[in-house]
Image (cartoon, helix red, strand yellow):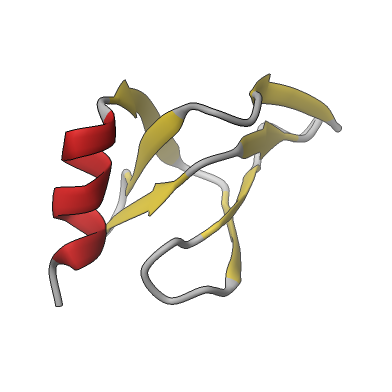
Length: 68
């Protein structure tokens, strides 16, 4: 795996199929183009085949993680 984004960044990961949104501080991509990340809201590891990854601000991250 290689790192798309290192520590210190904030990312919004959107499932292209379901449009569900997750927030994370680190995203990794495998050779199969699956994205691996830790969902900051739920605290669990997730893998998505079809996703859109967007860098966001710290305020955007805090607002997204605060949503229930």
